[in-house]
Length: 347
Image 1 (cartoon, rainbow, N blue to C red):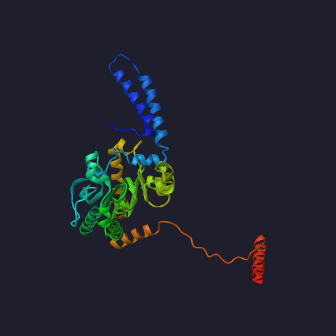
Image 2: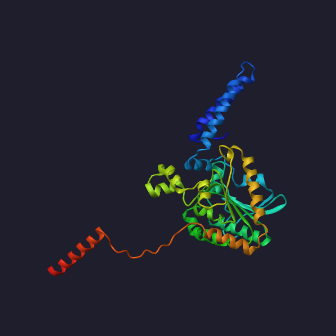
Image 3: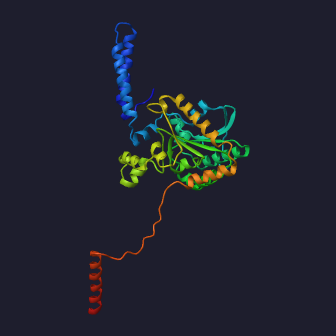
């Protein structure tokens, strides 16, 4: 059963009422078909009104929905012959980040991504999708293996951020992410990145440098979480909806800013309402973008990837010439000069 978010409750309540009427009609004692049809039409209209005009904060809530498909769900639905690898060969196996080789229509891929849990026990094991340094070192090991065998890379991003604990910092969290960003820019095989849920800060960027970056319609990609932003700016977590709007973190905003390459459509209500259809849409995007870049030479691939990220953001340089004061400014200058003169005479 899918849990309703606060803004979805009218939709779920109407859907529940329709189900109840259908059950009453099923026993043959009442004929409620006409009433059911009217309510179904009303439900469709209500869904469109609710889900086609979502605020940024509502999209953040959908991105965090506990029933939303995670990395292993997409791997299971899209790929075959998946073989998972473990460990960073240095410290430990971080279960918040998974990956391995798999096949799609006979083509081999290195698939990796953040992984959250479905219940409290699994979330503790997966650290709620927040990877430690060993997770990012593991991901880099995967990418070097893919490069060695000439295998394209698919990265699924879904994390609130890299784990900020003392142990993670002691083991070089920031440095490890920085190394990943640097080395992903140099990897000599195609990299496709999909933000499937949360795309939080450096935790997302640690596996987020790609030739193509796609964001699902109800996912978000941001330098900080709305709650974190609200605490910094207003000292108040309840300002998260305002922060979400200001951060421009939705897929639509990111596409308009030129930070991503495509928005992946989701079923009405979100990916968790129809995971199979969402996976099929992601699969189509993988095949399309891979076809566009698979034959590029390593030199052209790396150059295009570098230029893609270097071109992000806009700044202007302007030389301001010294202006001659006019009008009131001239008068103010004369008054100021007179005051200085009088001050010197009195001394």
